[in-house]
Length: 123
Length: 236
Image (tube, each protein chain N blue to C red):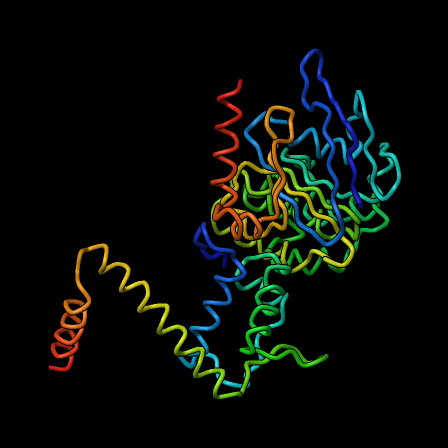
């Protein structure tokens, strides 16, 4: 199915981001084989050259490995996966902090707000 | 380059449909030819298909100057309904087999099944969506070097559009084919494209790689198209 993509970001990066969060959430496991470029293109309704770029980019980042004649696999390197998880965390925090700043909250107020929110969640 | 237009002009009567246009298309890529109605998109495709001839300049496919015979190498999906209403779907396929040496009946059979088209049904009994699907089946079943699609989505509902996008992605041979899609429905096809070409009342006013456009200018094809077209309108 054709998905909607944000206008301002390259599509190959958006698909890499989607795959990365699926890996972090465990929807795709370490060592698992990713769909072939053509299958992935059909699934997401995008040009196969774009998917090829997604896979190359993820390979450059060490998140996936291409095995000759077998396909593309998620890495089993735990350090890489841990780093990926931390990177996603930083990205999300970055967006949050930016939004809070725009609303005029100070650092202390942000932290205080998060702590309060978490306490309420637990209760 | 599989397809090349060099300084091509085309007039209908006194009106220019294309003014001194040069374009090149390479194998393995999907190009979007984008522009408002009447901007010269269909004319460009017809020139490549050998259905009309330029008043000036040269159109080449696979290093051969285009004549009517180029249809051996070029599959062309017209925006019009071009079927005989009393033919069945199967007869239409047989007609294509008889006309085009590169037509692959097995591929056609497979595509008909995927699109849930009944070979025994008459064309006049088909819905508009199914006629749209059938046109695509016939175009995709040819092993042509060049595939030209003129408004493949026009008037079709989102379900049909999705199935068309899927079959394009499944059946285009990226090692051997060049695909050019003319449309004004830019949002629909942006993720499919390698390159976007904007044509505006006979002039090519821009050509961009879709991902580079996003990366370097932070624009989607639609946004870029609108801003470029607005600038042109301002100059007119």
